[in-house]
Length: 110
Image (cartoon, rainbow, N blue to C red; front, side, top):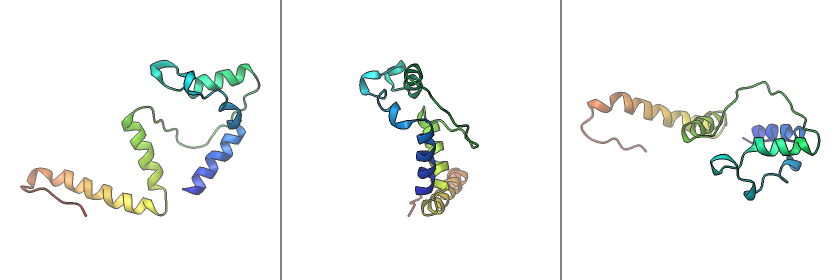
């Protein structure tokens, strides 16, 4: 995971991550009482230059619980340590859901 995080940090430097924190404050709550990155980007662009970098990859959002979970699972599956463990766990859940109707007693996962 450290490699993935390093890539994120590297990209963040390009988009002037440090400066954006001046605008990401609890009192800067926007629509639906959320802190919006886009609002901060707009403020940064009014007071200076915003540079962007087009990323070659998959866009994932975390704006609601199911999309957050999907993004998190995809990220975790790429991890060398946790990926195989998570894949085994999801296979157990998948097998359980397929056979759920034929079971008369609960299944205990270990």
